[in-house]
Image (cartoon, rainbow, N blue to C red; front, side, top):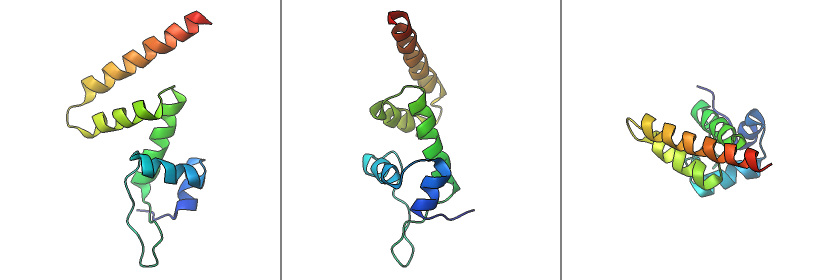
Length: 100
């Protein structure tokens, strides 16, 4: 397991350090453990979570929708709920494309 500081995590996920902090404040990323020196220590799971958030946003989900998706995904047997949310977003995107 790789331990990263916030700058390393941000660089690995191609985001700004402020983005990581913002996602933490919004509850999209869990608060990481701190080193004895008070630095945030992130692991590979945090990097995966950050990449997932960015991917979901690229698909057109808002931060509120992303928060909801992540909460749904944390529940056991949430596959049907996730699929329903993804289908709803796809319908919304199709509607936008038709408007264009």
